Image (tube, rainbow, N blue to C red):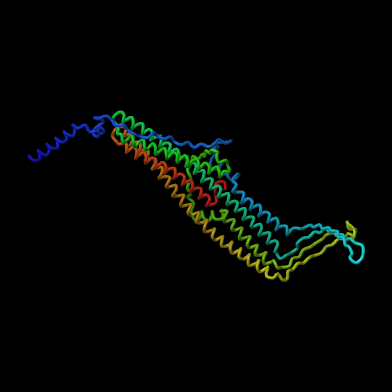
Length: 456
């Protein structure tokens, strides 16, 4: 009897609650029992449109190879190593002049006034001499060889600078692509949120939706607008940065084109190191510097040695100008600095220190280059794996949005499920763009590390 009484009380309570005109029950059942309350939401904000004044020749559509080519032709940063190379060539020419014959012309006319007696006299001289170095114990040839080696180092430094510019352009190129993709993702998200807002309002006005869904949808539109504005600003900044690297007007609109994905590398690491180390311009530069230091040491050691040169020419002497008495002269000249007060020993010590420095630099560069190759190889593999995972995550997020929107349209799911699914899709889309950028960046760094930068 007590159990029957308890169940009777429960049924009576349910009947009383069912008779009350509660708003919450009307929302759940889809039947309103009181008039809807007004919803106070902000007007949807307008997204910012980033525009720059038009410039002649824009917009410029280009692929990765074209971007690198333009940068290598117009990048002002490359003028510095180019100037250094020209200076090194000039030093080589100057040093080589010591091995070649020199032709010298001299002419003079002097007037002399006597201090003890009245009168004056004159003396004129003229000469044309050809001089050639015969032998100096290898000092001058060593100086020439050192200058040539330094010219080779300057050429390798220019190649390294070009490789660096090519890598920076590739990074900026794909950075602009990623920024444009992220802006597209943000725009798509804003359009989805606007559709959500229209749908929730329509359901609310038809008596099937909740007022909280309208407020959430309106807030989501405002948040998506802020995200789109930030994405468009990043895209504009990336475009300016790429134009700067290309040596173009920063107002020029660039349209990068790239439909492929970065490729991996399956080469054995040990074989990769053996092939890449001598290919790097930094390694070539330090090898030339070692060669130059060795020749500089030889030249310093021969600084105190005798030098023999031959001279031949014609000369004239007399009291009038031009002189009337002409004659030929020829012979050998020996120069031997017997005492130089330590100049040779100082030069030798300095040259030896330069050689030691070059050898130490060689070891440092070997370690740095090998480390860059190993790290970039690992980073490329991880980035490509992450890109595959990001593609799968976005595919799953798209399916989740499809299911959530279908359930909400059928009245089986809540609007929060739709927002959560769309938020997950936004995150997955952003992660995919970031993963694609990271993969291209890893590929660009790997190509630079192995000495194969595009266009470098």
